[in-house]
Length: 435
Image (tube, rainbow, N blue to C red; front, side, top):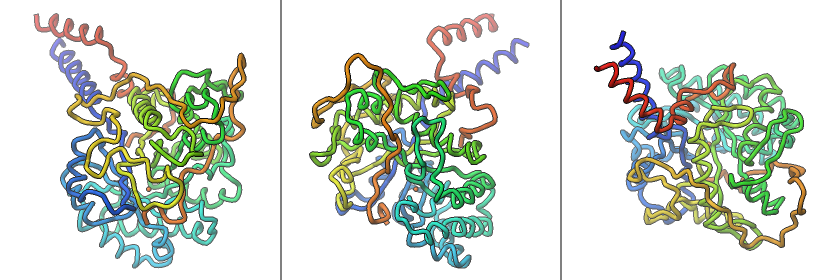
């Protein structure tokens, strides 16, 4: 009996130790719309030196995929919006695409997901939107023909937050009626294949519409009055949770609450044009560092407590050839010379730990504060705003977070909550058993 208890405790605490040192939920976007990036081999070594365990590519660049071989890093590759019509109309084209972009590299390069198209709904092309589902089905069929189906490599697409009709309050969020039929088919596919609903929430862009200091704190995971959902009575302390829960509510409204949510992009620019409020190094550091700490805590969201959302930060590097406002070229966590733009505790040499200390927001380049005094902060009229989109294709997008008992705490959550006293108890029990 003592031996059994000893074995169980040893296994449990070993699992907790492993979870405390890893960040399997954290990935990064690796875009290539630039002319000054380091070679893929150097980027692969950089990624291995960080706590990132996943990387998302917007295409299927063979040099990058090869460079990531045998690193253990999970890879999301993308089929561009321009490929969608061919993939939709011709199963043979889909087979060729898989034979060219997947089979030569898998499994040495750990491809786990193919994102077919990126933010397609933002272009207003109804034909392209209607082609998404048949394109995804043909890619899935090509994977199955190559014995890569059955969950080995999944297929999905990436959505902008503006597919929602609204997100305030989160509990009442629904998809826009004009996208409902298309999304229903896509969600049925996600549900049947176990692939995630990938979405790009950006609190930075929500802040541009409500520039009060309290809203900045709310976006940066800082101390703030919070916002209570009048329907669910749940209190939200940050914009990220509110946006993610709005997506969950929209999924639930269509009967797909068990489809996994994946945050394919989120981030904060460290500089921007003069009118882009809050785009500072200090705020970018605060958002990304505090987001990681929030995810790492295992607290989940108010509607999904204890569930850690798979999240990809935007981005590994700046992309100096991207069009649009200045912020579009200022999301990079690392510079082309492989040094950090700012430190958020990503290096493994820092004991694989991201500091839990909150980072204070800065309000440089803000207009005069318009926040009322002595009043509870009201929610802005609309919390869902389009994530950064350009006329191009942005460089052309596990743990089940929605199970039948979303309020149950996971093992990871329990492990992360262990205190030093619990560890001392473990030592004491072991000593008693041995003696």
